[in-house]
Length: 457
Image (cartoon, rainbow, N blue to C red; front, side, top):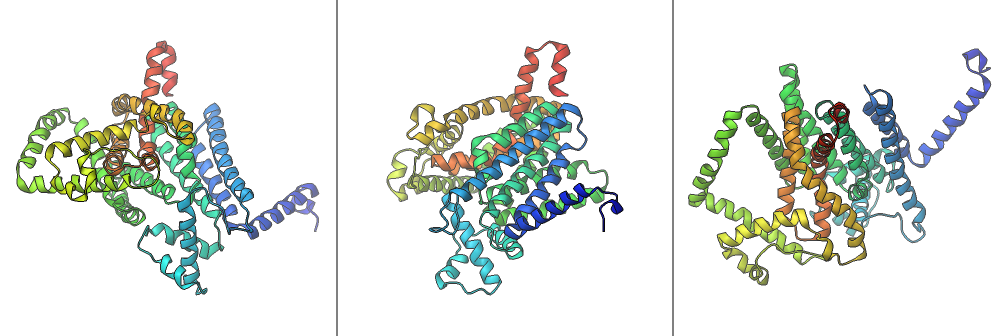
């Protein structure tokens, strides 16, 4: 049957056949690669929807390059790994543990014999997370995919970035949205864990979905839309709690914080009343023994977790008074002043650590440029938050809520420098958009009025 009969020239048919054979070969070798390519094509198309001209073109380049360099990093890992000695390569130590456990769970589900020790470790309570079962289920469908797990991480991360971009652009402006997306896609620390086989990319996507649903919950056109958004948030919160300990609590606290701030900002009189009432209510709670015990217990628990990080490998920092590190029992008689100093030092360390003049390794020196950028992000975020509230109070407040809840939580329990830098990634995806608004405002102040509007369009 000739190609002309179907309206296509013979050369076009040959190209279709070759492409089909190529896709079939790739699918046989790595099904996840094919599905990843399809998913990323859909995500890029969604990101471009409704855009015109230069903005559409630059956004396409930004996303395609970001996806391409991530896939290239995974391909380089595959080529650099000596598979005669190890079954698969990995970027971070924890990845190997996650991938192996997911493979053991897959084998158990498919009734493939496993070693007794592997069976025990597969269901070990240590680092237990539903993410392991997600990896196992996907590998039941497509076969063992130790490198495909990295593609999943890339897919989760890029989709979350585009979701927030689509949320921010119509409300806070196209330029802040584009800057924020660029920083999210290319910041080295975020790039590193976006190509990992760890749970962070999936956690980021799920939290970004709850933020977008939070907007639908408030602004849904019909009560049915709002009800569906509420149910979806509840389901996602439950999943987040299974992905990471306290994930549901943190998500709920972030949403409540955003909603409360929005309500107050839109009602200036209530905002003023709240500023006056909050210190009074806090003083009343702290004056009661029950309130003191509850808050003191929470601070003690955070202090113990912080002290535990001091004993871990790598570089650490201290936020407690020295005597509290000397014996575990000392933590139980922590004074109110000591608790206060611990909280202040922890929050300060979250912003400043690692200090540039305290770099103790080659990797720490290499991280210094990003640390400088981190300082800029922190400095610009308050400015951006104020101006973002003017443009869209709900979106700005939700971004702030997710950022501040994650930042405070990580600050009071951290003690290892590397872990702190990694866990800043929980707040950065939301803080960056506010900082981008602040940066655009500074540029607008320096431009002539007729050119300033171009910053926002």
